[in-house]
Every structure is written in structure tokens, then in C-alpha cells.
Length: 305
Length: 295
Image (cartoon, rainbow over all chains, first blue to last red; front, side, top):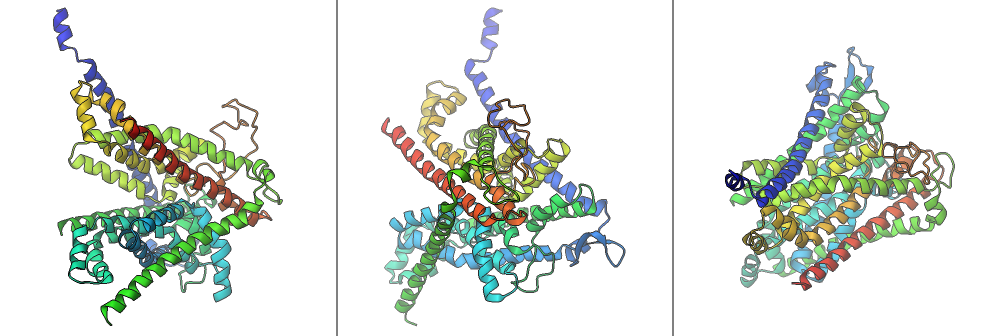
């Protein structure tokens, strides 16, 4: 009996393994639970505008008047989020367009032109740019960029242009560091072969290295756009926060994130004004998922090649 | 155009672009330091902030930032360590692991304002915790988890597979191999990761506005009773951090010297974050040398 018990009992090692597995499964389970909770709460709260307050989803996405606390012409509160959606996309795309050439230049410099000293130096520059907190970027935008724009173009200086310039500096390190990784991943024999055929350095970079790294660079740009789209405080400080349809780049506008940061504290939980803000948060969440899906799709296409 | 000319122009352009970026960074850091450092004084660092008068300091905000950072790391490190071990050591190669990885990627790409709002909804409103350091620390934990997890996973994965085999062949359990052999070897990478994430957490504000709150109530630095509402250690009190303070005085505040206060605070923030980065590199190198010279 004693012997049987002893033989059937699990060893000390097995028990240790069980404990260890338990701990690590628990932690990973916690993260999964957390993400599902975030999705559940934001989605259910974001949809309440449409289920409880009977706002038409299509109206929400296409109407241009945002004043959830007052009644509009047709007897319903006006919750048209189009201005915010357009502005958010606008600053995201503009800042990505502006930052990409610089990021690619940095990438080429670090991986092709000066892979030793220049690389180390620029690595520090990128890390420092990443390290500057977003409120500090916002403050710098407020004290440097906004006055310059006011001086050059008149008006208040707040607006899409200022936000784009601030975001340009903020997404630059994100795009640059991922671009460097993808350029470094290009096999050396490709560029060697091209140079051996008598191609100039630029021809090699442009026709071989950049082509081979295209999917990686696209991923980098999407990550940069995701960061720009979700950036809240820096944008909120320089964009002027007027929920108007953007007509040009230098009048005040408002993004999804800036509307959220200014609005949540000023509305009462459960009212339409508050629910409409949660719907904006839902749009943000969905867009962040879309960016993720695009990255996955680019990765798949890149790996087939 | 002849290819050689194109080559020259293109390479010249690359140099110009790189120079512009370097110039931008140098002027940004320079601007912050030149405008901010003269405002940093002992008085600025040790007096409390003012809403309506000039001459306010950042004592409470600075302490809140540090305290919040400490709590965040205490909360996020164990979970990130467990998850990192799972992903690096236990995770089988199948679709479930794929789903888990995607989940972590989703969490890391969520805008911090969305994470903050989720915590506001769940902890501040539904669980009635209110604006508090605890809510803020939880929000920052969620914001910090994916990066720290990925960092720990990579540090563990970079340890040679031979060491795992050696541990197992000695009859150690897998868990003992991980905690006794793999983890110590991965420590330099993990420490570097923690310090870098500390820098990120230190500067984060969007997730805190609606969780840790935007007010700095009067606190008593001699009261060590954690449960007393006036104690500086009480995690249930609202706490404005340095980063939130910069945002607040610029967007809503009516402080007359908002500009000076924010330059000073920005400079303090930047200097601390640069120190974090330097420390991360330094400790990483030091530990790496120590670990490798023993072998």
C-alpha cells in the first residue's frame, strides 16, 4: 500500500511544473480577459447611442452637426460625427505623408550609407524622440508651431496644420525604427549583386533594397498612422477643438480623440451627450483594429513573395 | 539624367533629410532645456502648485508621478513576467498561440485614451473607486503590459537553447530550468525593458486624466498611515501627475505663469526620461558584462 502510494504520487518536479504552468497560464489568461473586457465595455457603451437613444448609425457617420445636448431642426439631437472622423483621418494621412520620406531617408542612412557610426548616432536620436512625452510635444506645438502659423497665415494658429506638424515629429521615430528593421532584413547578397552589375548606390537602393523591403515599410507606415490616429493630448492642445467641418488647414477643428478628452468630463454619464462620446471611442477602437488587420494582411502578402 | 548625377542628388537628399531630423531633435531638446531649466529651482521642486497665483511648484505632481510609476511596475511586472514566460517557453505553435499574440498586439495598439476611458468606466464609475492613484495605476498597467510582456518574451527567447537542454538533462523540472537558469540569464534584457517602459509610463497622461484625476489635494508627507485620506501614501486619493499637470495648465488652467510652469515641468520630465534611458543602457551593458564574463 505504502509503496503503491509512493509510486503513484507525482514527483516534486511534476508538481513544480504544474505550479509554473499554472502561474504563466493565469497571467496570459488575465491579458486575454482584459482585452475582451475592453472590447465588451467600449462596444456595448458605444452602441448605446444607437440602441438607447435611437440615433441612426448612418446619420452619426455622415451628418456634420455635432451638438448632442441641443435639439436640432428635425426634433432630434444632432450627433453627426463626420467632422471629427474627417479631421482624424486628415491629420493621420497628412502626417504620415510628411513623415515617410524622412523616415525612409533615416532608414537608408542607418542601414546602407553609414551602418556603423551613423547608425549608433541616429539610434540615440530616435530613442530620444520616442522618449519625449506627448504632452511635451503638445506644449512645444503650443509655444512654437501655433504662434508661427498664426504669424504666417493669420487666424488663431490652431488647426489641422499645427496638429499635422506636431504629429509628424511624433510618428517619425515609429516609422523610422520599423523601416530600419525591414531594410536591415534585406539580404546583403541582393545589394552586392546589384552593385557588382555596375548599378550606382542610388540605383541599388531604389531598385533593389527598397523594393525588397516594401511590405516592411508599408507596415511601418501603418503603425505610424495608428499612433497618429490614437494620439490624444498633443493633438488636443494644438487643434483648437471646434467641432466644425474642416474647410482648410488653418482654422480650428476637432478630432475623435480631442473631442473625447475635452468632452467626457463635461457630460453626465448615461445622457446622450455622454453616450455619443463613447460612440466616438468605439470608432477609435474599431479603427485601431482595422490598422491591425491591415498590418496582418501586408505581412501575409509579403511572406508569400 | 545620367545615373551618376541622379545618384549624387539622391544621396545628397538623404543626407539633407537626416540632417533636418537631427536639427529638429536638437532644437526641440534645446528649446525645452533653455526655456525650462532656468525655471527649475529648489523652490519650484518643493512647493505646491497654484491654480490662480503665479509661483507655484510641482512638489505633489512629482511625487505622484513617482508613486504611480512604482505602483504600476509592481502591478504590471508579475503579470508581464508570467505572460512572457508562457509565450517564450510554454506556448505551443498553434492557432491558440496566434490568437493570444494577436490579442497582445491589439492591446498594444489601442490608443491610450481608449484604455484610460475603459478604466474610467469600469473602476472609477462602476466599481466606485473614484479618481484615485489605484485606478491610475491599473490604467497604466494595462497600457504597459503588452510592451513589457513582449520585451520579457524576447529576452527569454534570446537565451541559448543549449541552456534549456542542459537544465532538463540534469533532471530539473521545466519550471526550475526557467526560473533557475533561463531567467537569470535574461535579466539584463528584462531590466533594460523595465526601465524603458518606466520612461513611457512616466510621461503618459492621456490614460490618467480620467483615472488618476486632475486634482492634487493637500497631502501630508509626515502621515505614514496608508489608509488615512491625507496620507501621501494613500492609493485611494486623486493624484495629478507631472504630465497631466503640463496638459492641465495649458488647456484648462488659468494660472498666470502657465508657460513658465509648463516649461519647467517639461524640462524636469525630459531630464528624468533621458536619465531613465541612460540608466537602461548603462545597467544593460553592466549586467551583460557581468553575466558574460562569468562564463
